Image (cartoon, rainbow, N blue to C red):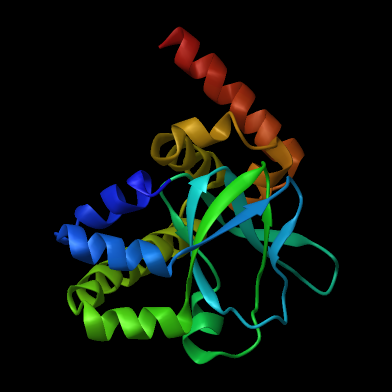
Length: 196
């Protein structure tokens, strides 16, 4: 059950068997059915979540009822509303399961305890925050400066496996375009790549 999260952590820090055991003792398992909420806008985020199995989406809904997907999270990814988690204020996002999912949850108080007992975890979570910031910055710049067809190409290059798992409507929402525009872009992309 903990193999994937321990491999994820091992990319940045090395743990002793005792530290691994202590860390995993702090984790709780949460299972979600497809379409079940992990977090709703207005709730306070009490945990950091690691996706052990499944796929989730983080989104917001504007005043016109339009959904805007901020992030997808699949196996081996962390997810949550970081602002709410760090400030313990109401979440700005909603997170729900696109597929039946299994998450490993680390409560905020347990994380603080972990920093004290195994200080190298501060380095690990610093790396996570830095990578999330870089990814978010790339996404914002891409959305502001790239035409829709380039945003689609970037998406399928970075997240090739995810396209098969996600409804087109949700990919369109993530890219900030209509499903009809996405269908045209995909059709052109497929034609271009067949002839290339």
